Amino acid sequence: MSNIRPTTGQIAALNSVDKLQVVFSPARPTLETIKAMWPWLEWCGRHHNRIGGMTIELPETRRESCARNRDIARHYFDTIPDFPILDQARSLFDVAEHVPADDAWLPMAFDAMLMALPNAAKSVSAHTVSAYVDLILNDPEVWQGYKPGFSYAVMVRAIRQSMRENKFVPSPAEMVELLQKQRRQFLTWQHDVLWLHNARDRAEDILLNLGEIKFEGSGDDEVPF
Image 1: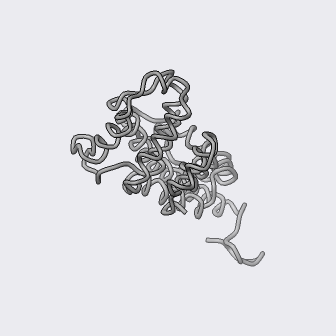
Image 2 (image 1 turned 60 degrees about the vertical axis):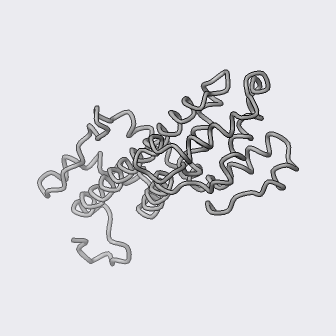
């Protein structure tokens, strides 16, 4: 569960690869949801306008439009995850945006990141992790109107982005920029999941009107609208 974090003793007994996995474990439910939703999250990202909205119109559900929109409705119905999955994803992404990780977990996460970076020994002082944590918890200009800190999922995604893109250890300013970017991403994904929810809902309406699907539990002779 996301509210269970590993202890310092548990982490100290592990090698560097295992430490990353254990430290990252509180974020796992959200990270697994991102993986499962990735094809659609990536698709939505390719169809954003300049302010983050979707450039693709939702299919029209008026009875006279149903036949024209049948193919796209069928595609949405067959491929967009079902409503419980979408609702869970939106809930997890909301937590990732708003609920900060346990303060004591932050230095563990940054220590694990630094252990995984081959150049860390040459470019990191004893105070690097302290500088990261101090900015995150004590600088109101970093918070951007949120509670102090960043969530487990935001932290892990920012650390992974740093390991993926940076050859050297990020400065505190660079780390904060990554964290703020990932927090904004979770806000964007909530809007994307809402769009997907609405698209699937409209797809169901169209296919019901065309008689291609029925309400769950309806009999063969029942009219589904």
